[in-house]
Amino acid sequence: MSNALVPVKADELHGELIQLVSFNLDKEEYGVEVLKVREIIRMPIVTRVPNTPHYVEGVINLRGKVIPIISMRKKFGLMDAESDKQTRIIVMEVDGELKGFIVDAVSEVIRISSSEIQPSPAVVASGIDQECIAGVINQAERLLVLLDLEKMFSRDEKNAFGSL
Image 1: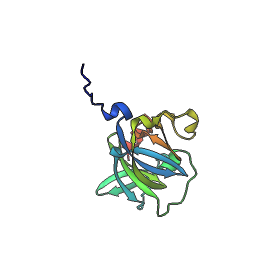
Image 2: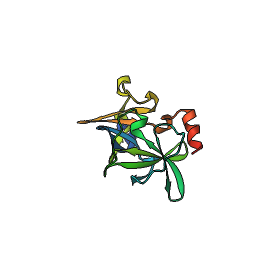
Image 3: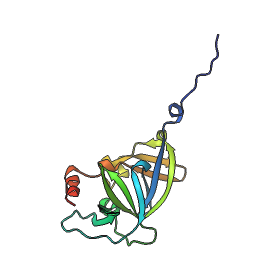
Image 4: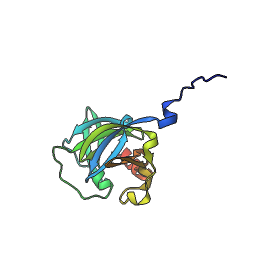
């Protein structure tokens, strides 16, 4: 009789490790996959573009590439706030294109197990389209809402970005 040890993969016990960039909006904490983030920059001067959705602040020139800048506060229906020294733009690849997202502050890069991600209750997403919430992570004293930016914009909104 053999008592051979069978190696157990880490993902079978605890789930796959995922790295997230966490950021703050109006005292709430959100997270996005670190692989989507291209860079995090300070708030530059944003050039306004007429006839864009209310949440599009304008565009910036980032090393020769013009990218749209989206206010996450406006997109989520939150009260507008003045930019301060903590305000950042997270430049991310969404649907194969770079977009900048204005956030109140970037917190940290965290590692979690995919098994820690719980489905979000419907009441969590008051101003956010339910589809763009990938889940909620409950860690001790903090609750982090995981966003799926690919599902944040409707087809019409995605087409509007193509004309910027």
